[in-house]
Image: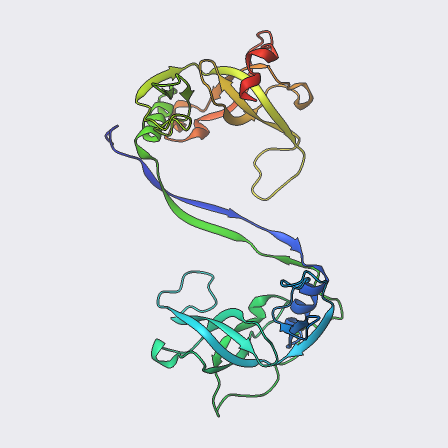
Length: 323
């Protein structure tokens, strides 16, 4: 690969997300699990569906849950011709705002209409329940056009009935995208592949940025002067990680820190190892620990972590402008 070619690669950002839902959302999700849709009445008599804890107009706390219909009217829609993974349907469908009977607001969901010609604002639709329900918005598999052939039979009860309300949900998040590094970051990544850390200096203020972004955020000018920096620096800030989380490769507790390289004006983020976590401190001198040569690539993971150099700590005054 030419070193002048801008690097680009697909990236995936993914993490699980578990949260408590509160009393109102919990009641809504419990209702879905049990095959009914709940809204909530405001002080002026409107019914909001999905329900919310506070009136968006007045800020009043809302508590009166009411059951609304499972049929309603499409108020606006758009066609999804190429569904993506994890969307409600694996075939083309419509995203629509639907005002259920008895509600004054709309909910967003999928309509399985077959074709865009079968969709229209004002058309009536009805809930199609999922075969298995667990207390999630996906308990509504989708909506379908209402017709004389629509089956009005209420949904079957849950396979494993329970009186326990829904209190907790998991909503994993996943973002797939392509990152194009740009010329400055590409130069940095080529350098890091050779265990060289390349920053760029602003021609106006003289600050050295690493990794470089191609311009100075202070002066708004391009930074074209490359500066090779040593793989040594100062811990300016740090935190001790004590919580386990999904995908975690390190055993807790461990330390994440910002390291200001000698000659740089912005810090690099990384791990600090080879020292007990409770001995890491601001001003500590550290150096990079690289992966083996056969593992090198255009990535910051080439630096496994930072370890103490054994040099005297830097005085706070020398780095306080970079904390």
